[in-house]
Length: 256
Image (cartoon, rainbow, N blue to C red; front, top):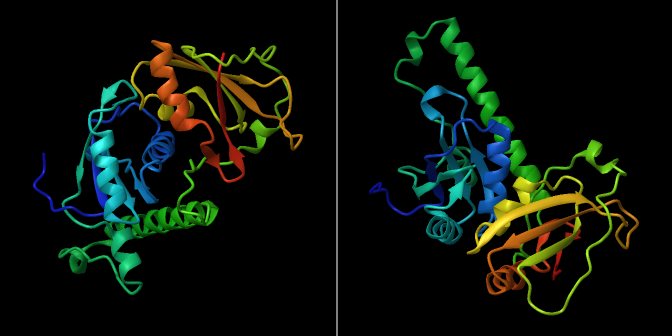
């Protein structure tokens, strides 16, 4: 463990380095945003950064809650390690001081044209990260009390019309099987598993096309989530029934 002082940036390592970088970013965001406002997720391509990422929170409270909750969670088949970063991220420093400019290397003056080109690419990457972070913040609900998972829109997915069979019958008594409804087209098994694997006894998820549209007439997905016992499933249902997957999309969870 690091001796770093508490700050709003977390260092996450021991990640599965076989996962696509963009998928890794989105899944880390989906998991960590349940504990606070995430303003940036940095997962570099370089060999030295494989299996590592930095998550920048809007405040220390969210970062601390996420660190305590997610340390040791099995994420893509590997136990995740989470600790405070040793220094504040550029994204945090730029939020605190709009005039902040990342420090230049001591070798910059003697750098050749190739090094200058590499530096420009790095600046462009940071600008892209900031733009994505601002886009996520604008899409977030203004009410901080509402939990929300950010899911990138997928226009192609929204055109799906095939069904996943009949809707399972809902029961009132506790059951080890849960039915999640009103899911956006972008939701996959991996996205839903990120939410439910936080609760003891989680086994699996199965996402399918819903045979009926939602009340707004939109094509939606549904999913079955299986736990070891009705009691363990009940804890997850109580926590996630009514969870906002993204703005305007509230998930319903029931026993089947």
